[in-house]
Length: 309
Picture 1 (cartoon, rainbow, N blue to C red):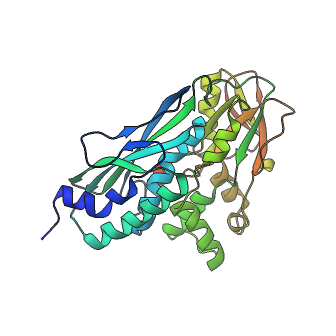
Picture 2: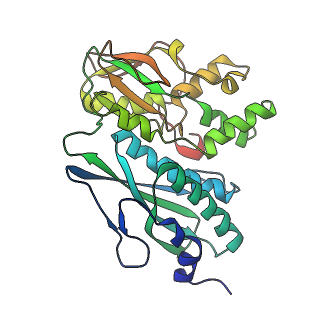
């Protein structure tokens, strides 16, 4: 007999609710999260739908982990300290094997990102997961999209384009060697939310955003909010050896510039600043509007999740 909502929640999710900032977790009508003196709350929500944001045959543990990591990336982009999260889960049925594996993925992300699961909801319908994250920011500090200034330099964390390469593998458009395949699929299924980097950038970066829709598209959000132009130098883009194993250089660069689901950070620093480890300067901030790239290509400027459009 399928589990009802509350037994389901307690069996698979109630053990994930402990955290230093959590005064009351799963079990009442609301959770209670404590802020320290001089802090304010940052919150964001992301929804993932099967067949749109991930393949329908994805492993449930990867779905759980990825749902948390992609939502946590928004906290990283603001420089927020993670406090907790809620999960709204829509399921076509109560498959307990699936739920067990999904909860294992959630548990791994809870541990990795210090984001206890403090509440949520379950309902019946097509598979989708909505994760709302809560974070704390100093009263007078936050990373915004709107502070970039002419003369700043543009940086990114990690490597770009890996998730787009993974998407090509999942859609059977590319078959790299096994080691590269494993690396790229992990970058898609288990992205890294750069929470530590975001907090390190507080008070240093003039603007920041996480790269969810592609570097060119997300850099354009900084440009629009700041009233400047971001000029990107394609030769400076950080690329993984796995991505570079593709035989077509133009495809590699298109993935790096326009591929989504990176969840790296793009940020601006005043010229001459010492950049954090693991980041790469990829351009500069100029007078004007929009985003300019010195590599001309016939490619879209934004990524539409798992549709690839």
